[in-house]
Image 1 (spheres, one colour):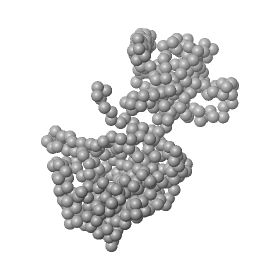
Image 2 (image 1 turned 90 degrees about the vertical axis):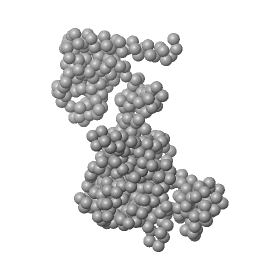
Image 3 (image 1 turned 135 degrees about the horizontal axis):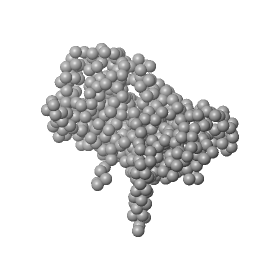
Image 4 (image 1 turned 180 degrees about the vertical axis):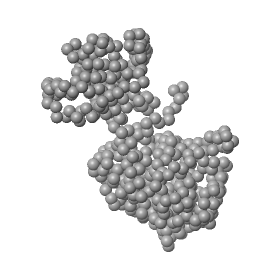
Length: 498
């Protein structure tokens, strides 16, 4: 029998033993999966309440706790049970535990969930313990747990069976607790800053607000093909037109039917906001305040480690125009170059393989990605993007080839993207028509013009700053996670048959 067959046989045997115990439990006690159980304290609350209890001391206080059995010693005399907040030791002995409860001990396996009522004490060794008086079976687990101290070593299995990963890996558990705190922290920060949270549709009849391949679905009642949201931008701008609030935000799930990598997942979370009468410089200040606030919340400081790097979220961040960054890295002065042909020639002379029909702005952006992005370790705002690749931003005064846009980079990753938003309805329509023509030229025949959005802009949108932040990547940084799948609870996986 090879190792895999033997492991499978052992697992099967262990499961059968548990099913046999379940059958006996049903005969002996009846309901093995009761609908409710009243506990008086969580394990963390218990630890906090009796923090000052001296060793070898019994309180006389009777409490009721519940949790999953993680370890069992001396035939169940000592057990550790865990709830979401922590662990507590359970002691069962004929001197303190009733016969009915002791009879249950042989039926309890690691992984079962039990309730315990008993007296609180601290052992001579200093372990906070409950002397069990009563034990209640709350859930019989039919599958053995992974070995606690090693957890799941198979990375793919950790993603596919995240419940086991969190159950046996304290780092994973902490990471998702921190994720919750970060998302909650973003919401509190935005509300404190005067932004109103709104909710916009996830099903779009016309997809837009970004350039991406959408997921397609169908609305049976409306008999309408629809798309999962790739960005909430156009609906949020319509909200701004309505004057519901001058500052709006949404923490939203977006879906882009594209590749998967350590930094990309087709389903991802963004925070997008719009601020009337503000511009992209106001958004830079907001990003710096938000990032430093989140770092303080998670780490107690704006300095933290990511891999072998030390990152500082203390503002102000470096601000550098894209043409200046490229000139510093390559010596090419794009602002001195006047035509697309000259830009392509300069790029090729420097060894960059740009497309034969690349524009001035596309050449600039390509060289930036090739030579500059990989150097941006500490947080920095890269400003003054080419208008060619930024159809919804306002022009930089005096330089119509550039727009008031920035992207925030850290650890070489793009974390945020912001504009001084275009609100000239005629210019907006012209740019969207041009973008549509380009999409159709690429074969995206299903792409349509969003006339409802353009109608709203015709009504008049105030000047505004707009910002989108990649929440998942930000969480990766703050939790020292190398892969986006490490901070998504249940990432999409291939079928087991594939």
